[in-house]
Image (cartoon, rainbow, N blue to C red; front, side):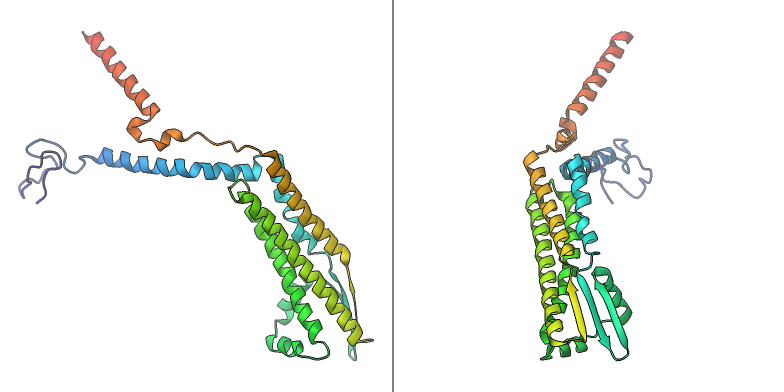
Length: 272
């Protein structure tokens, strides 16, 4: 059998009541208040440690009007990919086809027709259009990665006030510019190759305006982050220093104990 947690009395089978027969303490609930207080103290300590991160998150999202502007502008590269990189048209015995090339048309084509990897690999090895097809693959991958980088970068924007927020934002915007540039250059090379190797069958044009717009948007993201960094906007931290102390050492706890002791003293004096 167990012992009483207070007086260490060895409990026997006949001691079926919840109270200890020697000291009278409730064996089941003895010390439960201390355990609950310890658990609450640990929870408050974890909250106090995480509160600064939450404060930085709030500051990054809506702590300043520029924070909101950064989040909105961060979505514009995705909108820019809706502009056509250029147009492609080809004439075959069974008809002609012309289309603008942007992220929507690329995704729609893949969904409707699937992705034949074996066909792509065979086209990559073609002496006539192999280089053009490789450039086409680079253009598609680059455009998709630019969209992904823009989306991830805007999500990470909510962590701008973290210690690594500024370099991370600049890095994401720079990567977006790199992939967008790679896509546009590869698309231009593809168009030139097909125009030269398939005259009368294939014609294409490059829309550099869409590329310029995307570059300007990424530059705007970088400029906004630099301005935000230069402004050195302070984060409004909530004071949680009290919760970093043990419960019995907190000023609020000591004040409550002092008030309780004062009330008890006043009651005793009144009775006297």
